[in-house]
Length: 323
Image (tube, rainbow, N blue to C red):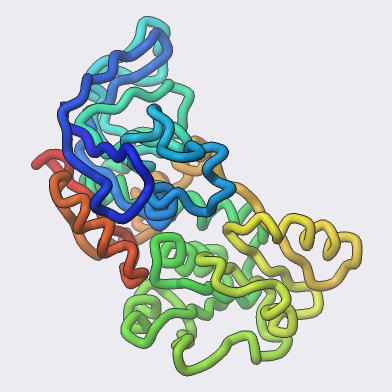
């Protein structure tokens, strides 16, 4: 089968399209014919071997053998199942998250039936379904489960035009919040079309100078910090970052101290969240934003574009023509 492989860390040019052995499902596995995948900011970091502490997982000098085919999100068709599989049957159209197993940038991918995998929304293409995995489930997890956003709150989304951010704007509105979206001027029309009540151009205004304004600041790109955002929070507001380990000890301190808090989290098991996202998409409550689509043999170009930091929503990779 064809797959994207990288045997060293570095620039997009370390990626190459090769013929590799097709995986064989075990007793509890499903074999998926991948129709579409994506390129995410997380994959850019993994390809570069950054941050350096992440090489404990990725590999100290070069990518570990099992991590040499990238790809975190996928949508495709199940073509074979192991003897013990009861949840899926061949012919099922699915979408899912490979997690630390990566490997979605290939024509076939094996996953356990218990993995973060769900029947894809009936009203989406494979490309759309692949683009509705990590960003959507991450936004749902942080807004619903960590921040516990509710009607009447004022929520600010920092990085509102990215993959996580475009879903976060819509979900915060769905939960009944007043939403302020932070993005560049060229993306204000996009975020308002997704439901944002207000848009702030970060190149023209620093949202952290607004005092006691937001019940929740969701930092979808972790471009700010609790120290900078603290004054912009209401007295019992919370700052919710998606990454950075340094936020965990700060979270403990703010929990003991009371008042404004840091609430970090880690969205890994996405199976239940995918079912919720599927329901929302089929109910036409979520719009999927796709910036650009590339073929599998254009993976280097796709990585270069995502690395600019200027993508709007999602960048997809069509693995087959049936997307």
